[in-house]
Structure formats: structure tokens, C-alpha cells
Image (cartoon, rainbow, N blue to C red; front, side, top):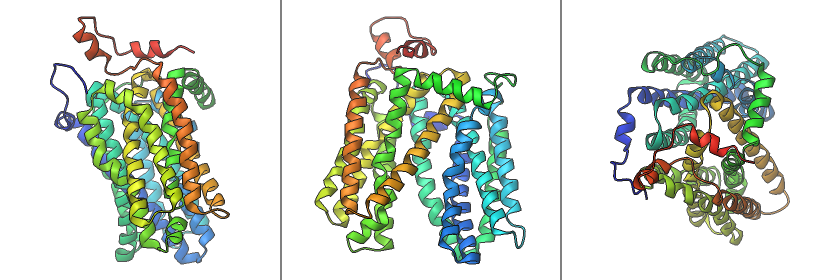
Length: 429
């Protein structure tokens, strides 16, 4: 734990910042609204066409267009004021969802509108992640990041469940109307609840392709950033249980309820322990534990090779999710090493890689589960992830953390580091 004599930051300190409260509330609305729209529109399309393929194409809108937006649009949050980017994204999404309410809208038009709506989400996410580093620094940022990640996980589960319930009670069209309203309220919260800040770079600058290329060179050309990015992308391997929850539940003799319980179990540990990890464990300790925890998050999945029952499987998946809270430390280190003018583009790259990695891993796991037991697929994915994590952990051991060194230097009577110092230190190949 941190040995700083100063009072440790608390969640109360984070929520005492009015800007953060507004941003946090907008996240609940945006994420919940996204899940609500996705479930509602999927049901609406299936009800009109009775085509599982078209329903799957609609549900894929939650992934495929996001990658395009993350790669080519996230950089807008570095060139334009980030508050205005978030407000514009919310207003555009509200308008697009409202158009979906037009009676007898063709199915292909509904899918196209949903894809465009999803494509607008990445610049919003990148701007929100980047501006969070402007609002809060140091330990308060770590607590804020933990809060946002916990909220995101909870909102996805609750939003999906609420989407199904809303469709059953009030119908898909009314659920879409609620989604449009959430975007309007989110835009108002951000516009009137957060402070205007100038764009880090300015409107004049390179085009989207040049920004993408420059951001990729910066992130992948830096050994520390590259390591942190790959630690973040490990989620593709330890999240495999979510992607094949249905066949895994079937192999246990269970049905949809069992599959739902398995998916929920992957998030329970993180939701319960992430706030404790961020609040009670000091930054230097979190940084030291990051590599080993990444290894354990993957390695414990190898236990399912013994084909345990439902309860034991849920415990294993929950334990894996608990170790996965190392992502808070990786996120904090990543932000500390990024100059402000590249922050949004870097987050866009990270999010794009995460979505692509999960998509590829889920497809590969599903294909493998056609020929071998799902438990073998999960165990194999966990083993591959553990090997990769161990390599990254060994690499990270030889790097100096960018967070938490202020406290250590204070105790030794040395001058504190400036906020940009970690970026300069990290630029070694």
C-alpha cells in the first residue's frame, strides 16, 4: 500500500467534483441507452422479419461500426473542444434514434441507422476518457477510472436486462423513444455540468488517416505504452467464457438461465472488488501487482478443464474477473504517459483493438467449440492468455511506473516529478 503520509484520496473526494458527477451520470444514461436500443431494435427486426440472421446483423452493430469510429473519428476529440464533441455526439445519436421511430421504416434503413449511431459512440468515449484526465489527477483519477469502469460493467448488464423487460412491457418502439431521451439528457448534463476547455491541438492539422498513423506510431513506438496496451487487450482471452456461455451451459445440462448466470458471474468479482482495489491499494503496489494479476486472470480459467459443475464454474469465472481489476492500474499508467494532445486518439486505438480482439476471440472460440468441449476451449484460451500475460509482466518489471512516484520522492526529500515527466521517461525503445 501507499506509504504517503498525506491523506489518501477517497471516493467522496471524487464525487465532490461536480464535473465528475455530471460525466458519471451521463455515462449511466449513454451506456444504458445503448444497450436498450440494441436489444429493442434487435427484437423489432426479428419480430418483423423472423430472420435470426438479420437479428444477428443488427446485434453486430454493437461491435463492427465501433471499430471504424474508434480508428478514424476518435482523434476529433484532440482537435476539437472535448465537451463540444461529447454534446454533438449525444445530439446526433438522439436524432438518429428518433428517425428509427418513423412508422414502417425499412429494415435495411433501421440497421443502417443503428450502425451510424454506433459509429458516433467512439469519439464520445474517447473525449470522455480524455477529459477525465483533465478533471482529476493522481489517486483521484485512479478512483474515478475505477468508478467509471464499475459503472460501465453494471450498466451493460442492467441495460441489457432492462432492454428485454422494456420491450416486453412497452414495446420496442417505446423503448427506442426512451433511448433517444437518454441521449438528450446526457447532452444537457455534459453541456451544463462540465467546464469548457480549449482543444488540445486545434482544428488545423493533419487529416484522419495522418492522425491515425501518427497516433499508432506514438503508442506502438513506445515500449511502455505498447506493453500497457497489450495488457489491456488480454481481456479478449479471459472474456471467452462470455462468448461461449450458451454452449458451455448446454454442456452442463443447463439452458438460458444457466448461461445468464455464467455471464453475470464474469462481472461480479470486478464490480465488488474494483472500488476496494482502487481505494485501499496504493499506486506503486497496484503497478507491481498489475502483471501477476493479469497472469492469474487468465490462468485460473484453466481450472475448467476438469469440467466442474455450474456453481464451481461461476466461482472460477468470478475469480478471473476479480483478478482482471488490474485494468485500473493499466488505465492509470496509460493516461499518465500520454500527452494531452494525443490522449483521445490513443484511447480510440485502445478501444478499437479491444473490440476487434474480443470479436476475433469469440468467433474463434465458437468455431473451436464445434469440435471440442467448451470447457477445453476456455481452458486453452486461459492458458494462451497466461503465457502472454507472463511475458508482458516480465517486461513491465523492468519499467519505472509513471504513477505513485511523487509520494516516494516526497518521502526521500526529492523534488516531485512534473506531470509530463512520465511521458518523456516512457519514450525509450
